[in-house]
Amino acid sequence: MITAERKEFDEIRQMTDPHENVLVAGCNTCVAVCLTGGEKEAEQLAQQLRIARNHDGIKGKVEAVTVLRQCENEYLDSISEQVERADIVLSTACSIGPQGLVFRYPAKRVAPAMNTNMMGYVKEHHVWTEYCAACGSCLIAATGGICPVARCAKTLLNGPCGGSQNGRCEISPEVPCAWQEIYDRLAALGDLDTLKRIVGPKKWNLSNSGGPRTMKKEGFEP
Ligand code: SF4
Ligand code: SF4
View 1 (cartoon, protein in one colour):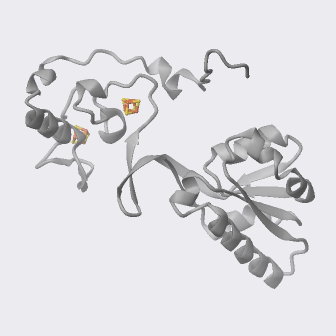
View 2: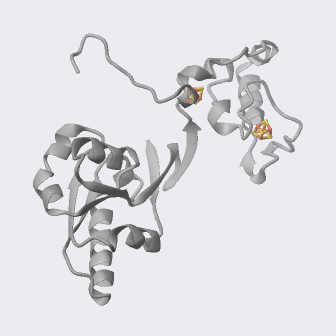
């Protein structure tokens, strides 16, 4: 899932204070699961803004509304009346949400309440770990099902580097070395011969480095 954390309240206020009517728009999918931007959190942020703005004598209303997914026009269509009333829409979705709002409502000011950080796996309750960087050409069949693109600090396709110590990455003793994990897994599977094959140059043009990407499902009209 996509994970995102709420920005500091001061930053949110800098974006919204110059505007009278604010719509806090929540998203009830990924950010609701990671307890940062769903209906409950959008309502809480709206209430926090109301109190702070009222205290500072800022005119206008703060409304809140939540859709199932801000990454689809159908759901954004359903809040057109609330968007119309607002001078600025503050999205608590991942950063696809505010950009979807910009696309759907081009005349409206939009601001992000969130910092989007990664595609994460729920490794423990309420703990997400980055497992994929959406590189566009998955190679984990060659690395025991563990992604060196997202999980190795140097994105090494053939590792480890010389900084791997006691199974930890050189960037921090808190961070496991992805290549140690790859080695351990391949050893456990009896597949260590896999490591004798050098992974060749990767098609980075299929990743975001090749520019913004579009996926089109064949056989369906846009
Ligand atoms: S190799 Fe690419 S697509 Fe596969 S898990 Fe890693 S980042 Fe994601
Ligand atoms: S120590 Fe391991 S995870 Fe860290 S950069 Fe080197 S190979 Fe990658």
